[in-house]
Length: 179
Image 1 (cartoon, rainbow, N blue to C red):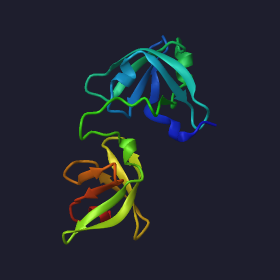
Image 2: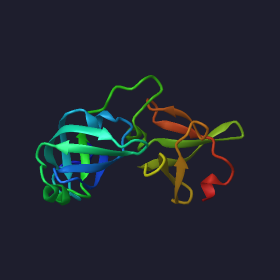
Image 3: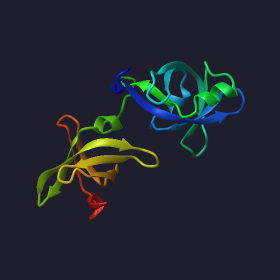
């Protein structure tokens, strides 16, 4: 079995599109070229070994996080039906270059979470997961209660990230950590 940390899940195949093997993919990535630029990708059904495929072309549905993609190996609707609910993967080192003060969500996993209390930083938890169904959310496991809370990943709440020293600082509105 392949190691989970070798891969990044960038999309989920939701349905066939037409009769010629094209599929609809829900994007889980901020990088559209992962669905439009030709090249090697991998498909994974549940926890099976990823299968190498060649993306030939793709385009985004206007106003949506859905891409219509054409793979070399999938040429019929029946073949497209068989890959519904598969994950679209890239190697974890296939990370586009970022601008200053940008980072990949996967880099946030395991960061210590600090909260400013009376001008003092206090460790309150650790980033244990990420969610980006509709919005980017950090899942933080609180140290005190072991409870997991979802925190919107926005500048107003996540005010500082220090990847080098492995922490981030939160400024949540009142009650957010109690949900």
